[in-house]
Length: 263
Length: 321
Image (tube, rainbow over all chains, first blue to last red; front, side):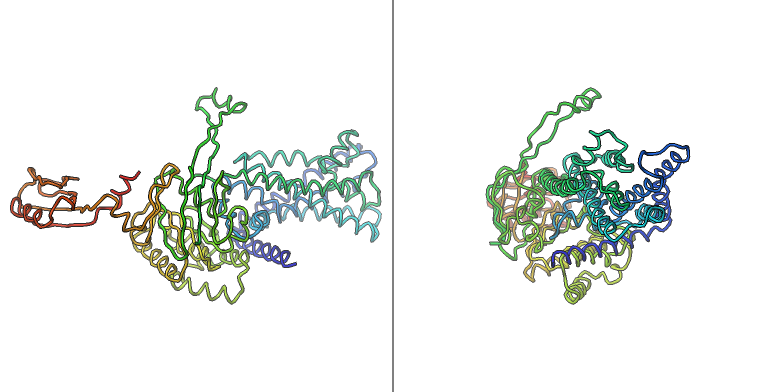
């Protein structure tokens, strides 16, 4: 319990300092906020164009696809806001030799790197995603209490998948210093989670469900919210936990290869 | 014993790569690994309350040693115990009791005032409100930064920033503090303030390990000097013994009425003829009688000005490197 309180104190201080930093440059803050907000609306617009042209994702209405995309944006928005910054935080610090300063603090380096990377500019994705999510939920049959409970549980697993990705990405930066393309690789891989997994081939669905659980980012939470019982849900939930455990092991193993910068 | 280092070794693997386009393409597929021995088995101990100058030329292994002692790097082999902890193994518990100031790596946050950045350390070190206020007031008053801690860091001078770095590093009242070039780039006044602060904290029992190229820092602060070069420990003794390393030598600067062209005296070596009438010399005190030498200079050339000093510390270092 004390450990949890310490972590919460770390995050609340990180958020306060992050806010103070953001507000030091208000113009930059507002521009980045709107860029994040607008750039994330691209995929819902693509879905809208697909359905307006008469085509469709088999078995999914436009609102249900928007539900997946809203959840995807909310999960990514939450991750960007609260912990994903640890990837570029660690990347920059390792390259500049400042990561040493993290290692001389008596707390979890992962939490410290995440807490000190809080940036309100990234709330654009979370707000945009929440808007689409609320719209989509209002257009599908009203979910019951059980559906909502299952959704929240799966949304936590969705965040755990993104957290695992942030550990895998930041872990590689200890060895491959200055790898600026790592974010694009992540973006490309996770974009498969923006659409119903049922549109992909069987083999690819298995990869997204049981190997790299991208389907958990949005597809599974959306499916249970609309009352489905998607195939492979429980196994995929277990895989998410294994994925998180493996990502943590990988991160700590890579940390051992950290060699600091000269001088 | 507070710090115990035995047979400490660290080998880095660097990858060789040529500068040509062909070499760059080749390095994508094939890289030649080059082991670099940064530390070749150094051993030393440090007692509580010491203030040790840790010296060496660039690339000697100073920073690697400090990084291992602070738990930042894993050694390749050897034993290290600091305050009962193995730094890299017990990192979280161990670093709660140490502080560090890196002259070229800031812990402050560029866009916000230092007093806001201090809050991060308050949270990290779980400092109570009361203890935080007491320590902050004490440090602010000692370092004379009452006005500066509320100014955004980017608007502070280097000296003001450096003093705030010390507050950041000492808010949790560490018993061991590692200083890496703490006075780099500072003016004389700022340096003096930092040195006086280090002295005061050391008098209160804080152990300091000072890595620096500024020999004034060493002369004014350190009571003991550890010198490493090419990964090996080449000197570990008091500052007095360090000064006596070259034997009993004196450094003389003399200005005379007559030209010093023919000056010669057994046990005297000309170091630097500054002009026809002014010269820097080194005297071997085991071979020269000082009175006789001064009489010789005065009778032969007419002394107008004479300064006799201990040999500069740079000379000792040059001879050791």
